[in-house]
Picture 1 (cartoon, one colour):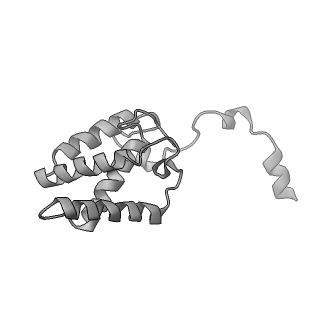
Picture 2 (tube, helix red, strand yellow; picture 1 turned 45 degrees about the vertical axis):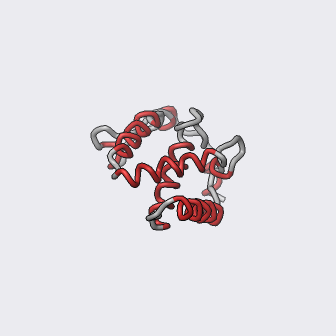
Length: 133
């Protein structure tokens, strides 16, 4: 009972606000992206995606076009924890589409990686301009 009574007591003013104690190691890194830095992260991701090889860029563009059909209000890609099976099924359907369209289709692992990157980008303000958590 003593433990629960300590939980219900209010914190002193000095411990209730601000940061008291050492910073976590990741917050000490230069250019640490804290909360509210999604736009900077997206620009960095998009820049790095421009450096992909030409074939991979073409696959990324096609995956983005296909994902546009699954990008709507209430879509499973915006769930707090998207279902792994649903994302795998989406990746397999994209894989089938690319197998029909391409002479040398990419491996399924590449499609999954590109799909997850595109989902990440859309969940954090890319393409539709909204941020979903």
